Length: 100
Image 1 (spheres, helix red, strand yellow):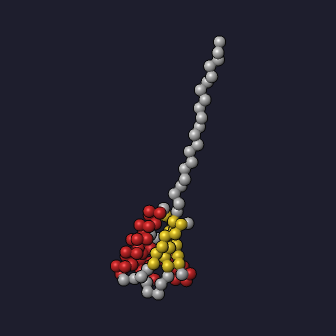
Image 2 (cartoon, helix red, strand yellow):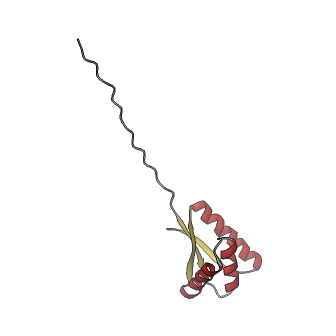
Image 3 (cartoon, one colour):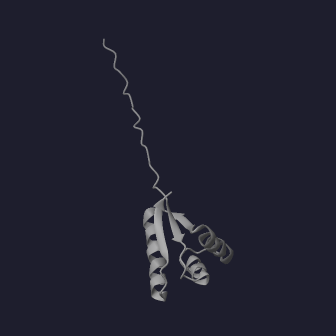
């Protein structure tokens, strides 16, 4: 009489990759006012007034400042919205999106 083998269950490993994060960076220029930068940070990036002021000062003193870290689509959307606001006001504010 032959023995029956039991069924063997194999586990399949599933690896999930989390989406990459991207930094939205404001660059310093000599024309965009500090008040406008604070306004954009508060309206588009939902920063508090004190956080927006700290980021604006980093942009002014160091030449660039990180407004936030987001997934690619959100980072690009926020950068485009902020750039559109700056163009509507006549400011040459430069905003870039870089991988974290």
